[in-house]
Length: 173
Image (tube, rainbow, N blue to C red; front, side):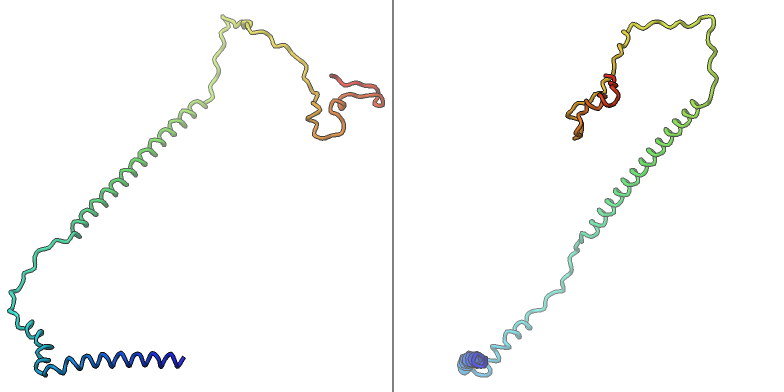
C-alpha cells in the first residue's frame, strides 16, 4: 500500500512543479507595476464608473391577493352548497316523519274496535252454486323409487310389503 501512496505523491509533485514553472515564466517578463495594474486595474475601473441615479421600484402586483379572493369565493360556494344539502336533508327527514306519523294515525284509526253491522233479515242470503268442476280425489303415492333409497341394502318397495313370517299382512298400495 505504501508503494501506491508514494507513486501518487510523485505524480502530485511533478504536476505541481510544472504548474509553478509555467506561472513563474509568465510573471518574470512583467514588472511589479504591470502586475499590479493587471490585477487591480480592473477593480479600479469598475469603482470609477459614473454614479447612477437612484432607481425607483416599479409597482408590482402579487397574485396572492387574487388567489386569496378566489379561495374565499370558493370556500363560500362550498359552504353554501353544504348548507343547501343540509337543508334538503332536514326537509326530507321532516317530510318522511310527517308521512310516518300519518300512517301511524291511520293504522290507529283502523284498529279501533267497532261493532259489526246487523244482517238484513228481510233479504236472506242464498249462496249460488259454482260453475267450476269438482276436484276429483286421487290416492297419494307413497312408494319411493329404488334410485332414491340412499344406499340401503333393502329395496324401498320391499319396505311396504309384509310377507310370510310377519303374519301375511300386505300394505296398502
